[in-house]
Image 1: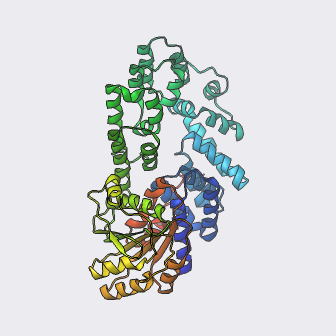
Image 2 (image 1 turned 90 degrees about the vertical axis):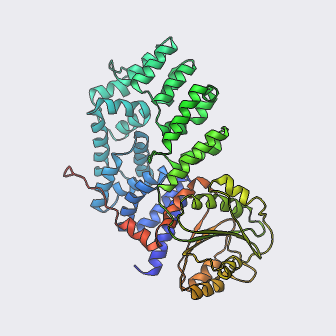
Image 3 (image 1 turned 180 degrees about the vertical axis):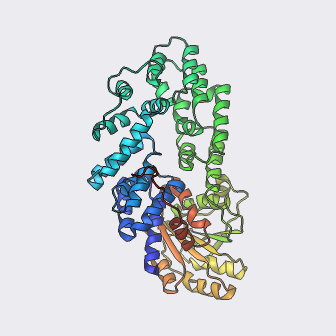
Length: 478
């Protein structure tokens, strides 16, 4: 693997990890580039991302590309991975194959057929899939011309669900007159919140209690805005149940870190609930890895760099929460400003940056020069900047002196903000310094995705970890 190839792979990986959610055009383009660069690497990356990534769009596009690929092992891996998705994602995979890959190969049709028949063979599993993803399930049967079994046909297409099916229970719920009967049906059959709430005419505290009792921690997070709108936060007993679900979420590895961050910012919640959501996010980030190397975070505060300062606060909270080694933080314009937070929460970092205002020239090297004089030795330097360095000391020569004096060569990670340049990156590459760059596009919820880049000993280690991730294998002889 030569340096140019490795740089391009890492550039693709950085883009993959930091692409904003729901920008499917960007997602599709990045995948196309990675496949063209290295199809073998792409297959392992697909499986690695399924375990470590957060953006559903990427997971769907990975499966679609594997299922339509030229490598049999990839098609088999896509076959297995498809079986683990909820119906709405399977439908999105099929639509992506049709619209972007312009084909749905026989093996992909077989995978979807297996998906549907497996659920039909387990009535409880089918009922829950049909209840949560009714339109997606109908779309899969119809668009791929899969003939449903008699029970599936009755539930999805004829509107005549058999007695005892969840679809039949939902009809009973809509007809139930008393809140007690509604609550009983919700709890007994664990009816999903988004479905049940549409069938119940009046949401009483008792019904809310039943709904929350049946919800997973992730579902509570996803529906906090709806719960608040229905008065859940105004009833102490109901609020206590929500608190309990959020406390469980912080220990649940399946909960989306990204969703917790979105909920904390998007819903007008009390400080206690926001703190619980932040704990969910922080604990989820910690599960992605620990920074064991001394690290420096250098934040550009020169003119027009308000976005860098805001990002610096969030990175400070993110990094300090998962580091087991020393962390040195500086803001800089023409001179360095040490930044010391009283704790690891975002509020602590916001307070630490409170009087750091954008203005002045740009000497990225001044912060590292201050570290050199204080003998603050690190293995990793993260720089938030637009790379518009225009004053001495310049970073590249200071970096050279720092390396020579301490006998080390720290990895440099440039987080580009605003209308950025490539001056800093170019200067470091001329010195053969280990430098990586990725562009921050304003999506704060994607920040946890950069943790893998910071917690591995080197970028090559991360690439090798991905290549060592085994592809799932079909065990049905298909």
